Image (cartoon, rainbow, N blue to C red; front, side):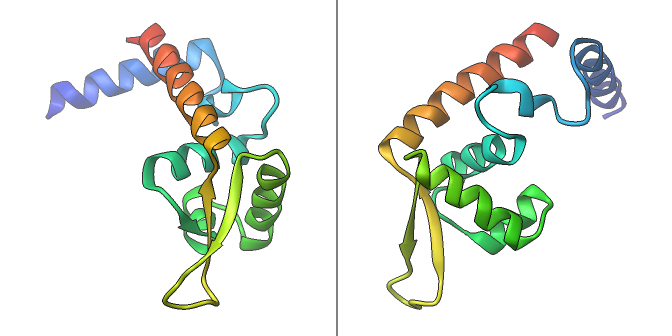
Length: 117
């Protein structure tokens, strides 16, 4: 375990030399904001998510996430779907275009991580 912790610390230091550690993933796509990038990555990894879940994962309030989803929806990356069990629950899910963006972002994240490994 100590070796893994040391390796992780070294990798984080290497990453910090390449870009700010505050949010290294946010710079993956210049056309999207950090919350938009993270939203696409979470939705691509876990499938449709309620705004409340997405807000917890992003570390921001639901009004902010609503705006993020609005902008991603306007760009054609996300669509809203109502739960069949509870119509009050609305989830954001990636469209086909959003899935393509997710795949491209995943490749960029992997490539960035390869640089520091």
